[in-house]
Length: 394
Image (tube, rainbow, N blue to C red; front, top):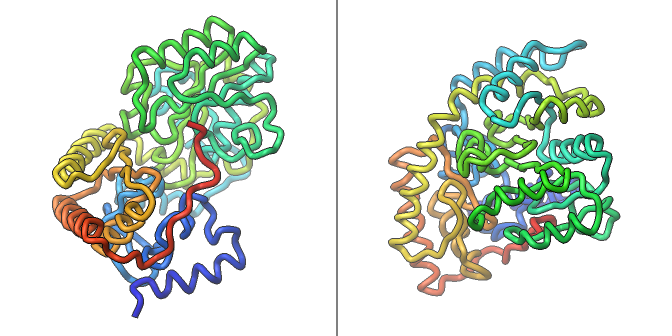
């Protein structure tokens, strides 16, 4: 019997009722060797997950970076259970101000906070706030900031957005000189390290031309450091957006910034911005994140040693690395590591603070299996993965 029989059957049904079969592009079955890789998960504990066919894996995808503390975290689970009886109230929740104050105490550029549900929504909110504050339209986008029209190059009018490659300071200044710019929104780091003083110079140019610098810390927040790249590189943007690991997988994102800017967030409103379950999860998660950063880096360096010893090409920072195989080699790598009980993502993956010594032993065995298969010319049992059509510009 096929190891992924139920995944294959459900994928066929799901594509009839949902575009792509799932709600997130990066989770589509076609991003992996479909037919030789699980398509649906049903549960998890620590750094381990189970698929719909009952197979167990060490998870290096971590909900696309959202689950940094591991699954079934007792403190978060208990907080969520207690909040679930009253998830959305007719008025405000005390949790809104409480969690906001926790973030203000933690993030240097934060004097006020606006909550929402998704990273795309938070980035769009930050852009709107910046446009209202500066009374300008122009946006310079560096990296990936979601699916809204202003943020993607897909033939739709994106509303005065210029898309600039990472580490290209001259292009930023050219844009500033060409038209009035409200903000630069940037993923401060991902796989490529910033050139010397690049982030400081981006912030300086924004100050010089009267624009705001917005750090998109969705991926980096609670991973590179507690406050993300801003803390890791010791720089202070004008504004920042956080999400993903903020509530350890529960849907919560936020925009933070100084009071003089954030007063223009009065127009950002939503029924579920103050939803209590996710806020309760964040309140329980935030105190745990500080200690989790060290564990993520330590386990990441263990993985780095394994990859080096096996001559597996990789890049990025070891809390969010990427395997640099392409084509059939990448497909075989994903197929064989999954067969060995370990899940990786072709676009880059994440280290869980919940990884155990046993998880690392299993990871080593799965990597060795993949290398043997690639070098031995093993057969690809699944389909060739397809690239994401909605992705970063650099």
